[in-house]
Image 1 (spheres, rainbow, N blue to C red):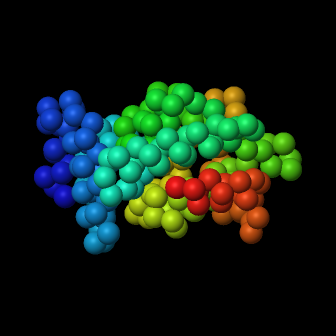
Image 2: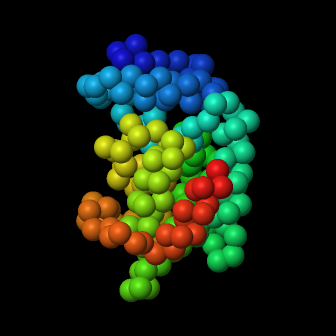
Length: 178
């Protein structure tokens, strides 16, 4: 863990995206065995974007393509460029984020549906469960409301989601297609 905390300063880490991805994978794997990563690894060098899981890069790319295409299908659930979506789910830094467009009965952005979506991705082993403790940090970094503004009150939204969330059937269908 200590060696990983200084590895992010190397030229290989800075120049090659696959090295960053493998470093993040190794950190997640080490996280399964308890404890926390040294503070030096948490910060600007390792941005908290998601990392879709797969047995190889081809499988991960297929999942990303499928997920993106279904999420932007009319009526769209997200609004972002494909490049930004790829960055958000390959552990690389993002620029503008992903606009979450699902609204609830109150016509406000449905953050509970976003948490439901991400937790279902984890339950189906498309995302590592090791991020569950930092999920708010990941969501805050990656997702925006329909106007591109940072999401607020994430902790309350996560704590209050009910049995049925907005667009749950469609979200389930998208996740099951992966």
